[in-house]
Image: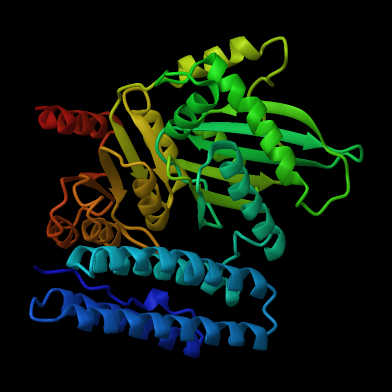
Length: 447
């Protein structure tokens, strides 16, 4: 079985020899491991030793990079080190457990390598480039590490106390990606001095149905007004218990409360750098807890109060019923194109968007689409690399991909078709023709 190699590209260089050299070395090790697992004569022991060697080099690289950042007095050192810690202390141990459970099977090793490659590429082209001033880190305003850890520990304990859920943090820098069918709840707290915080809670719907059913001893398999009201008041008490870990002696009171659509959530989340953004796996579904200090807030809908709570919740539930529509993930580094494509498809399809290859993979893992419309030419991680990572991951391998390309020359189209996507569409086509092509694609897939 052939497996695409992880190709080093010049754009991965950030211009620091000690860092660029080790990045190339890590790519080389991953490619050797790919060769090992495709050779049936190689033993499980060889794979174990190879992964141990890769992990050792990765840890050595992180340490050297941290020494380099300290030597140049890099202002983002502490945040960057925390991102390293998040990967080496949380992500790596979790995917290593999978290797052990699967006895280092070919698929589990591929999954391990695809996760490592995805993280390495994304981290190199964003946070590592920030070391040289070529980009700006998104995570510059995170809470101090000890406070964020205290928040995470409090949430884990509360989830156990309230619902006997054994949760674990799976991402300390949750970027707002969609997971499953979600309920998006926003609380705005204000202080007498005019300071305020936004708390964004994201519940996977199946998590609420499971936990609130237990609280109410109900048997419903769908959310209703009563269950949502119980969720609201539990969530408010939940937040009160957590807020004590934030760096403020002010007394904060609730000023506003909203139930958001995913698009409104993205808008609120995307306009600010979060101070805390944690994603948990509870065993019953995902849960995210995000804190933002908002400025210049846009209107995100009427506030919920005692007089309108029932009607607002009923309206929200009606508007957020499962539509039965096919789910399309639109991936393009141009916000202008994403907006126009979303407008083109949103009437007939459930749309999610991603502005990079890395965020597209995260989105697919959390909420599997029926089709990906993928820009072929993107910076950081292009369409070819995204498709390769999808095919290397069993859970994503069967998702059909239609490439979007602005290139019309024969060589570009030949290279694109060699990847054997489900199809391709030229961006120069009239919008309605693009829409009709996607409609025909789904009609052909009907049994």
